[in-house]
Length: 295
Image (tube, rainbow, N blue to C red; front, side, top):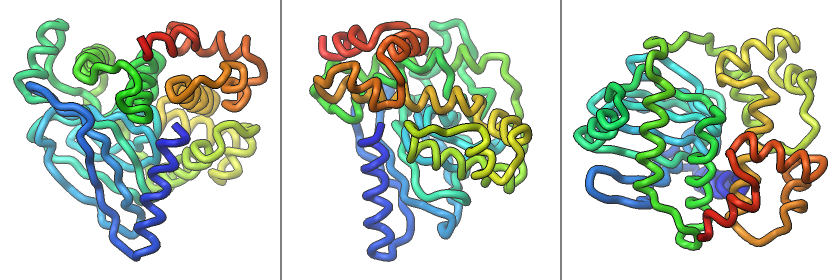
């Protein structure tokens, strides 16, 4: 994950160096009948006008770095690392970066017929009922595999279509019966949480207490905890832990470092705590996860 964020930071730095406007660029990772997967990097910031577009396909985008505001007919939400953007084909949407510069996503796009077949086979309705899915534990394994595929390329055995099928069915199952309208938040609240998310993303392994994060947000600890959880779907502790675990999963795919060294570098005090947290999050051990990716 550090490599993913670093590539975004370099793109933003190049934009700033040449005084360019923010842009969104995509590179195809995989394509096949009915689907396409892209690496999308956006360098827009507060000075850039929010852009309104229309989803050409059914879209599920994994946010892997940065943060931004997303609005569609179901509401306006803050998207942060680990969360998913949801969009129905033919529906308008708007993305903006009022409180930070840049983001990076792995975008899965499905033809309508293909997506309807996935939903039918899963016994679910082929539509989204929420604009976002937060960084939930049940999505951690598929998210980690996608990030590993983004950073290691063809050096691991990853079937992007299979991953997309798994992702789509899980998202439909999670959002089935969810509220149709996302709650609205004040611009001030969004700005405060966005600022904290950026701090966590830059320093995920530091000693980040509720008091420290609340001061960054200029809120009391009580109000900070409530606002953060309302907007991200997670408590600050959960958000930090899952950030560390996603980084660790990506590190497992990138090389042959000892697991204990990786655990310590990712902010865990000992390997036993790391193994326990990893198994709880991904349903497997770090060693087994590395073996599966390289099988």
